[in-house]
Image 1 (cartoon, rainbow, N blue to C red):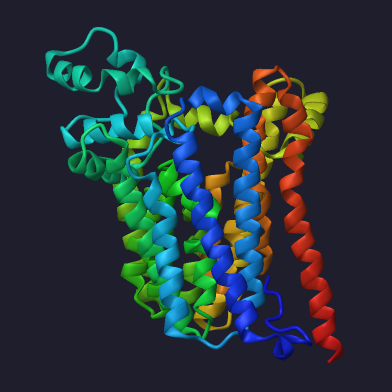
Image 2 (cartoon, helix red, strand yellow):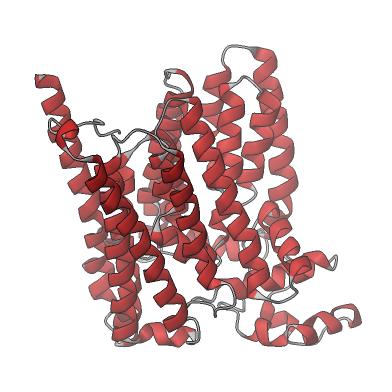
Length: 471
């Protein structure tokens, strides 16, 4: 869904004014990250239960994110200039640099990454033992590993569950361990690199399809992405490069490369498998290309996900627990969950609801994926719509999950999805409410507020679209 690129008074706006607004927003975004890294880096994860911390985090990310998106919206009609490109590239780097050497930024997911990376780097299977098991009686071969990382292992959330992460993610964790064993900055190097590659691929795609380089800034200079990915070290940053490469390969009829790219993305998080019909449709009706695509996707997916899926058949499987019980920051899901609970009873209601969501996601994958598109621009546009829909269907809507769709939205010019992500920092208000035993206020109420920018963007899209029709 793309908002028309120009308004009636577009040409009347002074270029210098728009450029000043853009540079000011980028400078403000950098300063906000400098404040976040300095203020919250030294704090423990428990500090996010404080209203002062939660409100500051929510306010800084929402305000700086909204200003950056608004500034780029105003500047979208400006003629390209190398100086603007340099400013955007530098701003994205400067926004992320303050996090190197800082603490974990009120997050604890990275502890699991560090353990998995250490196990893979030393030749152990990360799916065999939970952190709880590792802190018990161990084979002699694992004693040295546990002693070296005991502090990390003891800090892991849900220690009774085994790893949830597929093979591509595990390989990146191992690389981070080789860079800096048991250190958060090793992960940040890997994730920063993934973000930089994503930005380069977005700009390449925009250049190839006649888009504005300013659209790349909607990802690279997005304050939410810089904080949640490089800052908090979430592996979701690694999704976009293989997805974009798969789309690029499919648009050029490189079927095997498209399958391998998508398989590597599935090896980070499982959901990109739902993009398979979209890529297959781009290669249709050449049977040889479809075979090569299926071969690449199937073999890489089996390699990266087979061990995880096999391990999920036994007890203490993290993937099974996540699929069956995780939900947060999604008020519509909470409302439906209550209704299904009333209709089907405890346990069964949740199962039926999640099965229905899987069915809707699969149906959307086929409906959107199998429609014919207009060239490579149409391909990435449909991919952004599908990725955004999957996010909004997901029971868990963590703000870093915006990395699922924001790179695709930036590459395709989907302003609706870009504006929609502005409200996601409402997630951070969950923690002080949960600490006060008031989590339902967030789950059934506050969480719905992050949908306001999305619906506002949809309304703007319809209004401007109608204006364009009248012309």
